[in-house]
Length: 178
Image (cartoon, rainbow, N blue to C red; front, side, top):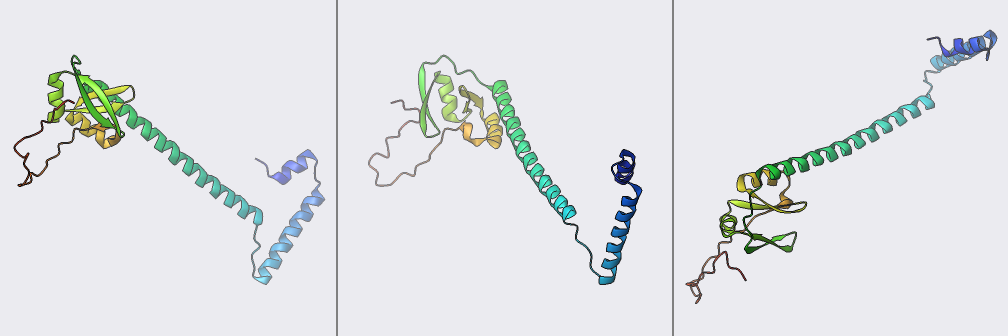
């Protein structure tokens, strides 16, 4: 492609004398700079480089945000797929099973066998979207690696028995329904 000067000459915007004068002025300026030992600072070039750097930084930040959103979306999809493929049947809901999720007490109706598996820790409750789902403990561990907030585990608390406790002989069952 032709230079800008050649394009202006072709278009008739400048003549050869103006181009010659521009070259002479530019060479005089460079000669004066060499004598003085200073370099001229091209402010427009520096401003363009600064703007380019700022645009690159902004683009990097936007890409990082976009990548984080895509990663989070992929994690949610993975969790939903694992729950869909491995969810267990709650059984005929004859017993109300209470559990806490996000500092709220939730209730789910399950069969006696499912309740026993929940208390033993073989099944774990996953609160995802529409409602609670039951998955095996192995799958729940994989889900907890991705998002621990949706996994509800039954906490097995071991209490030390005090020697002076008059009710030490009376154990409270884990599956007590009130």
